[in-house]
Image 1 (cartoon, rainbow, N blue to C red):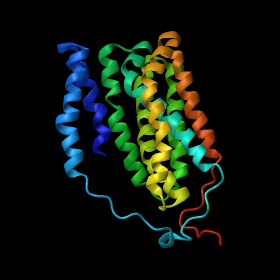
Image 2 (tube, rainbow, N blue to C red; image 1 turned 60 degrees about the vertical axis):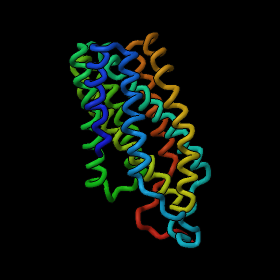
Image 3 (cartoon, rainbow, N blue to C red; image 1 turned 90 degrees about the vertical axis):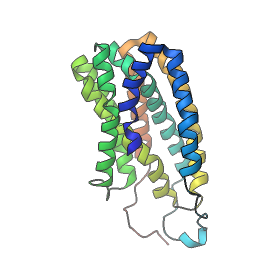
Length: 251
C-alpha cells in the first residue's frame, strides 16, 4: 500500500532534482538513497522466511495446474511488466506528446500512486471473493481502455489514462503473487515465483530503452504497442480456467 505512492512522491521530486541539479545529479541522489536508506531497511526489517511448505501438508488442496500454465503466466508477466517499466520511465513525456504541458504531465503522472492504492483496496475488499485470475484479466484490460480514451479524447483525457493505467498496475502487482498461488498451490511457491519473475525482470529492464526508441519514432501511436501487449496478456489469461475458490480438488 505504501509503495503505491512512490510515483506520487517520485515524479515531482525527480522533476525538482532535474531542474535544480541536472539529470545526472538526480540519478546519483536516487542511487544514494537506495544504498543509504533502502539497503539497510531491507537488511534489517524484513523477517526471516518461514520453513518451506511440504507437499504432504497441502496434498489435495488445489487441482493440478493446466498444461502450459507456467509458460502462459511467464508470458503474461513478461509483457505486462514491459508496459509497467515503460510507463514508469516515460509517462510524463508520453503525456506531453499527447498535448499536455510539463506541469500537467507531472501532476497527472503523480496520480499513478493513488490509483494503484485505490485498486489494491478494491482488491482487498470488493474483489476479495473473486478468483485471482478474474482480477488479473481486469488488470490487463485497464491500460488498453485508458489508451483508447486518450487516443480519442486527446490531452483532456490524460488523467483518465493515468488513473486506469495505475489501477491496472496496482492489481497486477497483487496478481503476480496470487495467481501462481491459486493455480499451483503453496508447494514450491518461491521457486515458481522466481522462474515466472525472471522473464518479467528482463523485459522490465529492457522496456525503458525500447519504449523510448519506439516513442521517438511513433509518438503517441506507441500506445498501440503497450495496449496490444496488455491485450495479448488478457487473451493469454483467458486460456487459463479459474477453478471456483474453495472448490475441492478433483480426486
